[in-house]
Image 1: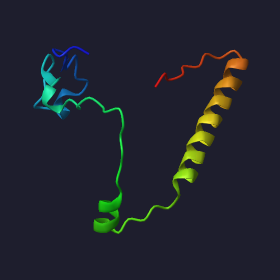
Image 2: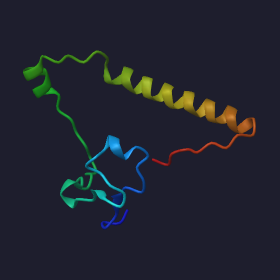
Image 3: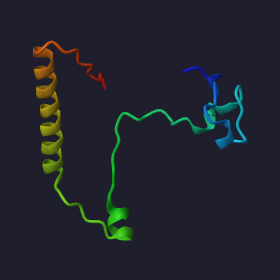
Length: 95
């Protein structure tokens, strides 16, 4: 993504619905002020403030959450394998 990238209105199918807009008008631009800082290597959470201020209580344990995440990923892998075995192309995220 280039820092100079902008969004420009190419056409309006119903210009009367948007009287303040016109073809060729720039409506979006990148503002570096809103860039996320670089991610740290280790991200640690502390739920104590949510527990104290919001009276939040976790509904499942960490082990249960991990099991749900693994089961979900396994289901996706099975779906992709089935599609691939039947000749379909499957895009898989590399994240």
